[in-house]
Image 1 (cartoon, rainbow, N blue to C red):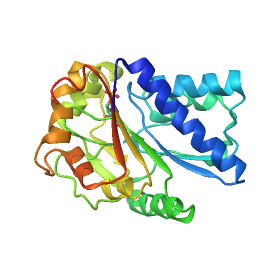
Image 2 (tube, rainbow, N blue to C red):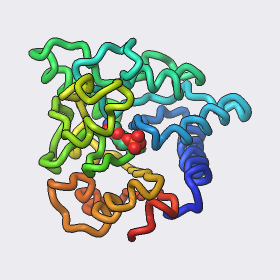
Image 3 (spheres, rainbow, N blue to C red):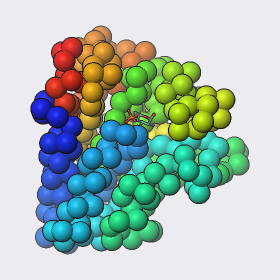
Length: 244
Ligand code: GLP
């Protein structure tokens, strides 16, 4: 779906999330959301905060799992995805803190594998992700599933691509400060979501969107695996869609 600009697109995505939350509330059910970081979803989070403040949207029945976190990373660091999620969403809504899940960047290496298996188990025990939102990196990564990721990959520790680290260098005050690793949900984890929305804004994302949507499916561009899914929607602004 192509919208004239990212503002209107973000509002539409937020409305869909709000509808899902309200439907589940009416049935006295929980909703399990997969959330993303980066600049792309910020407008969606802004609108969800507005719906909470001005229209009484409650997040009491919402359980969230974030896609990824740098490794190693202290949750209190300015660049952590914990800080990002708190500042952009969680501090402004009525979500129960116990319902928030973000990969733990503080674990000793030997505990990471079992943490990742547990992350998968928790999602499954709740009946899976109802909706996963995604951005896309210029390498074609979703979450931090960099080129070379397998389509059935699970949550795991990965090595970041050099281009990804360059793109993050501004947040860290230099590429040398960007962690070389991250914990990310796998492509297989993302695929199990009942609904997937990938968002991209601006002409900077146009070449990778073209590859993801029209390119040959390959581990070299992990987002091309989304071509296999029936329940994925790309939500774009006109600039990001300009090379399709
Ligand atoms: C990071 C995140 C991804 C995100 C990507 C794009 O690498 N781990 O989940 O999609 O950046 O970021 P932005 O939305 O800022 O373009």
